[in-house]
Length: 457
Ligand code: SF4
Image (cartoon, helix red, strand yellow):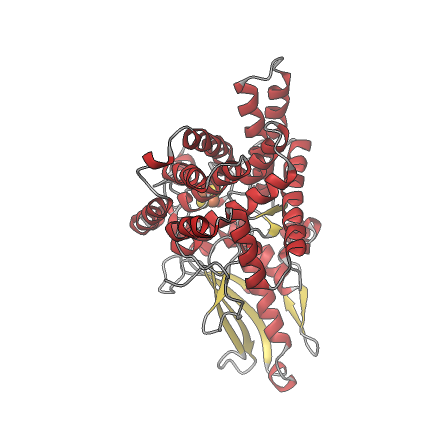
């Protein structure tokens, strides 16, 4: 099996919610399409009559609720996820049929939501979330340019028939938790150092640059919590779901003694806050996806404010969490459209459990067991967002699962490492086969589960 060569910043991406596979991935794909289109020779551009984007699978089924059209348009208009102002997206969402222009240098091509088509939900492309982008020819013949993109979850995209850019090889190669554990034992390195040294080898960035990037990720995560705690009112969309984070915070703070209930209340308030910001389409960090963007920010704030862990511990914990996310992405999936919610919220909970365990100074076996326990308790979890909006059950699920992640850390810390019966590799493999067995109604299509039952009531 090939060694993992993912970057920490492939996993943790800054961008607009509410769904990494439906917003950040398509925006990146549209940006890539724009880049290639801009490189076409002038005689090719002279033959272009228009642009067309076709969304397939889950992108078609839930793209409306997930805001896919506005992010595709933003990408075609030259915006990137990490620096696209929320107002720009809100403007696109308010008036998607207004004519805007794609700047191809010699050609300014009109574009609006009329150029984006919700195509077949059931299709034969390899990836459930496929987009086809075309520059149509004025003579009605073969497109001047056509590219097929797969949006793989977590904002990862793959372009059909295009070589993936070459990267450096990891200095500590591993593909499974078993190998990672053996590596840690052989080298004596803690998990975060293995991730850090690999990151340097893969991306060429030095340690200071990597930590600066980690700090940015942690800052944006914490800002999403603060932003969500500062507002009230209804979230966008027809459900009319009211934000709850601020109320949860006030209630937790009103308890006179710091109790378990107040601790859990704070944890939930933080997770609600970031998840509600995601649902509002505001800037969050994929962790590992947008739908699960509340869990790691919530545990990070708890680590700082309740557990009193130093910032360096939070930084290194995030790197250990990345190792768990890498394993899930490499050996299974982190996309709800592929594996159901176990692949998003389940993996996020496993990462959060590893983050707190590592930051608390646990040995690698305890960190692994915390991650395994958290993931195990999400196996089989389906994805059934009501109305295709990342609100019900997604927001509450972030809160429930940060509590589960912390509980997994507590349980793992209390068991001798030699007594563990299930490894993280086994939990990840189980997630993979369970996701394959799962009916596609339960994989981000809003055609089953709560999405159907609640719509009926
Ligand atoms: S149910 Fe889970 S996987 Fe599906 S959209 Fe919500 S958070 Fe994402």
